[in-house]
Length: 69
Ligand SMILES: [Zn+2]
Image 1 (cartoon, rainbow, N blue to C red):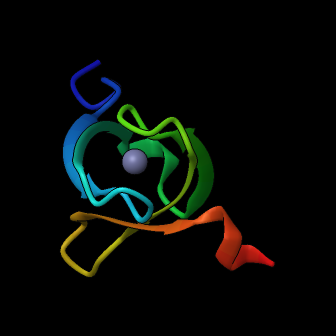
Image 2: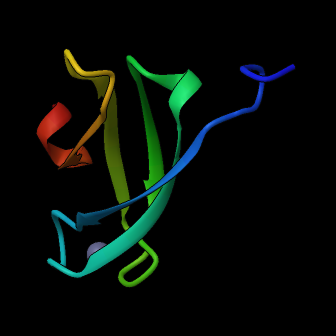
């Protein structure tokens, strides 16, 4: 059971809309995923891209939903 624990990692990102730093919980088992979460400050949808770097460190990048189109 030692390695079955879900790894939640708290990360700070800057909102692409209002520039505020917001804290998000990233599930390490969700690496290589993209999802949308509303900004806690301006309530606009932020697109999160979660990936792992070579050291198995979570890397989170954000962009505005507008950039997707
Ligand atoms: Zn915002």
